[in-house]
Every structure is written in C-alpha cells, then in structure tokens.
Image 1 (cartoon, one colour):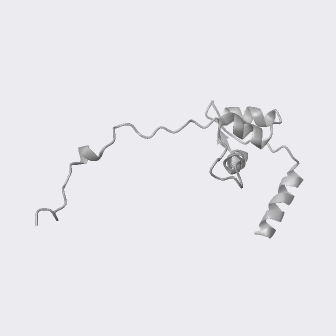
Image 2 (cartoon, one colour):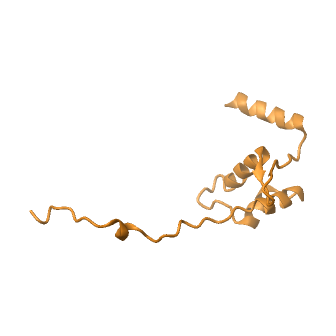
Image 3 (spheres, helix red, strand yellow):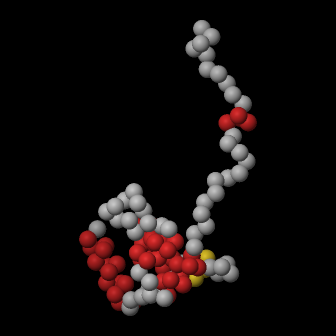
Length: 104
C-alpha cells in the first residue's frame, strides 16, 4: 500500500529558480538599418542569427514574419511606434496582398 501512494513535494522543490526565462532581445533597430540599406532577407537573417536550421524548406520564415510585423508597426529605441517602410510601391503591395487573398 505504501508504494502506490504518491509522494508529495513542496512548491519550493518544484521551482527552478526565481529568474524568469531569458529571451534574446530582438534587434529591431539593426533590422531597420539593414533593411533601409537594401540588404536581402537572407543577409539580415544570417546577421542576426535567425536562420531556422530545423526547417530546410523555409529557413527564413522567421525573418519574413518579423518584417511583415515591422511593416505594421514596431517600437523603436525611443519608445515610439513606427512602421518599417516597404521597398516597393504601394500599388505593388496592394496587388500582392490581393493576389495572396485570391490564392487563399
């Protein structure tokens, strides 16, 4: 009977430390500088170390998603929300969005 009983442990034994998990700070400013300098998505991803080695079919997915979100707006170093400018015309952005929605 004693072997089947679950052993209870206190919450303090379950804690792995009082620190929260440390995430790498995302380099928004560096990405914005490289994007305005005309660097490609692949070059930027390699420079900041965001190439997905576990996804050989689409290793730059993370970088493209980040750029998509930065085009919508991100917080810069001074705390202001700014939008990353597109490097193509507005008509081209509109046409690509329309084509993507049609394909979806």
